[in-house]
Length: 250
Image (cartoon, rainbow, N blue to C red; front, side):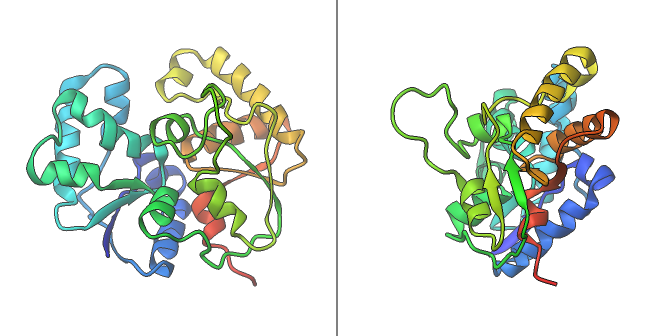
């Protein structure tokens, strides 16, 4: 399968190791991976702020960058949800090839498990790891079972299944496992005091698990928590799902 690697702008600028790890994981899974160099921002910040005209322009450009691939894979649940679910709300990617590309855009773990049927990539990571469920991944992409959903037992999502397949990894869950970290994109800029308070509460819950690391499908959430960790002097270190899946025994 020919896969286009969609790298969010904040990953490109602040955490490029996540993009390289995603590439290694996809190649290990047998994919032919390309990286369209014309890609920029998918438009999520503009959509969140109500700047529809700018979001439409970026959305159309984004889809045009991936015209010749079988699937688009992104190491971010929030950016994936923007493309697949938010674009139609502003009339982007609703017809023809752009519609196909939009529908064939996947979060990394979702793609590995649900499209390729892979939950064991041969990764080795002998550490205690807490899982931070991203809000977009949990509720938009259904990568897990949110606590507010009534009836039935919680079903492990792709992220949890992949982490269970990592050798040596001990997976732990914080109290209130699907609570927001407080980042929320533009929310953290408009309401920094509230964002920081939510984040510190989440960081404390993660620290109480005794985890060495906290992982997530979203670098933005991890960067937010890491900033709080460094300022407050406690909490597990952040590591993206892709970086764990790319880890091999030394």
